[in-house]
Image (cartoon, rainbow, N blue to C red; front, side, top):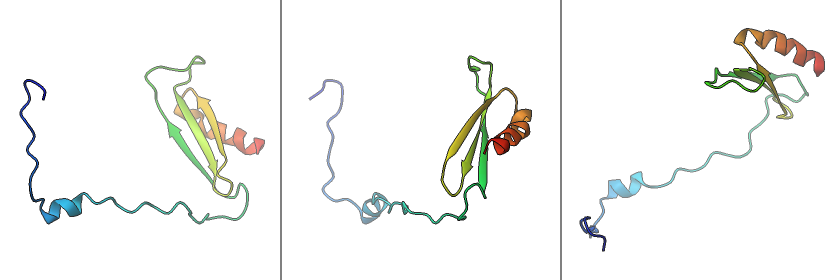
Length: 95
């Protein structure tokens, strides 16, 4: 027993609502249907930042592009949000 703490009293009966609320939820399906059947037909993007500490190159944001079909990810570091469109044009030319 630890000095300074009161002893724990384990209840003899637990109410039904407490038991139901502690049941784990069923997990989501690990398989999801892709919305597209062609490579680079649908691209999702996300911009993250600004970060408190810039990278060594002075970048405060990053933008990610994800292909819906292959789930391939491309990540670009950018200094300001206004660079997103030019970054996308460079990404489109690359792929």
